[in-house]
Image (cartoon, rainbow, N blue to C red; front, side, top):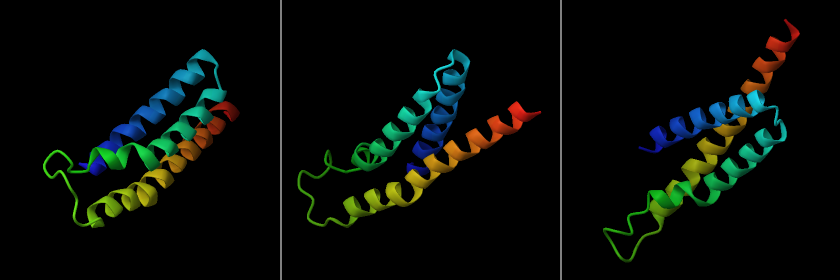
Length: 95
């Protein structure tokens, strides 16, 4: 399920870059990247906590694993998508 969230977020990131190019708003790409990095820190890991099933977490290992997954995989993936988008746009503009 975490991988599906990362795929959806990556597709939305790419689509938002395409929309910002269409409207000529180039600063929005950097804002989108900053918001996504903040969401990888604070929002996405909390979606996977099991607070609705258990009212008190006795062990913090699942919580830490969610945060580490999104920090190690999610943030670099967002930066890689950002870099790939800009490198493909430079190649399209130079042709």
